[in-house]
Amino acid sequence: MSEAILNWNGCALDKVTVTAEMTVEGVLMDRKTFEVRLVNPIDYSKWMQDTTDGRNIVSVKRNTAATMGALNGVTLKDIYDLNVINPGTYSGTAWTENGAVATGAASEPVYGFAVEYGTPVYKVKKGESFVEDNTIDFSRLTLADGVLTVSASDAELAYEIEVTIPVKMTYKYSVEETRGSWAKKVETKNVVFIVKNAD
Image (cartoon, rainbow, N blue to C red; front, side, top):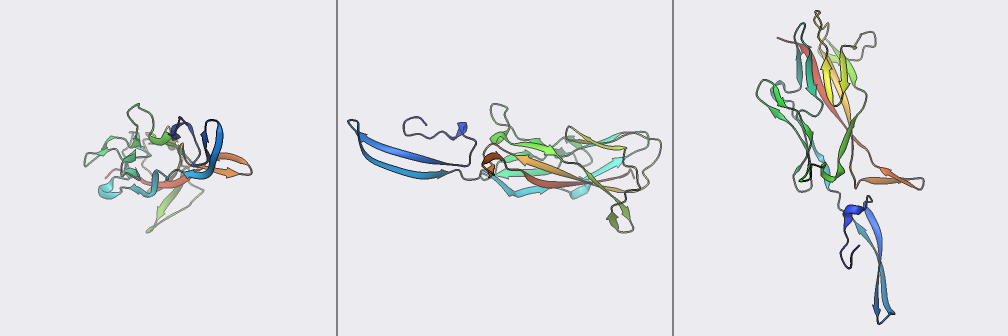
């Protein structure tokens, strides 16, 4: 804090207790203690995955690898309606730019926002529904550095596969206290992609 200006950038907490003292010629005249709370800047209710026009379909051809960015089609906005996650660019038939965390003027993630990816969950389409089947080998599908890859093979996929990827999100000002220590609060949302043979 510099004089009467509270700069929140150096603080990772979402609220602080401030004591203000007024002195006259070194004599304490008044003291007030109050709580300053940061308005949550990220609005998780604005999380959206665009699945229109086959945007969430990973189309796999024989002997050709296929990829999909885990944030493709995902939008997340802050309280000012600015993107925290940019959804990428879809050309009408393919992704020409992957979805990504938005950056500010200094090329730093907005609000110190970061994502980590949990372990994907795979289901196969049987009839009209996707169901879990632990007897099926999903080793052709891998998730690394935010990109889902289906490796090349001379065999077609035996089933249409639904891939659910947990996206774990943290940012600088979202913390919670657990047993006397502070840690970043994690919000998890799922993105879903369909992997199938090319038409």
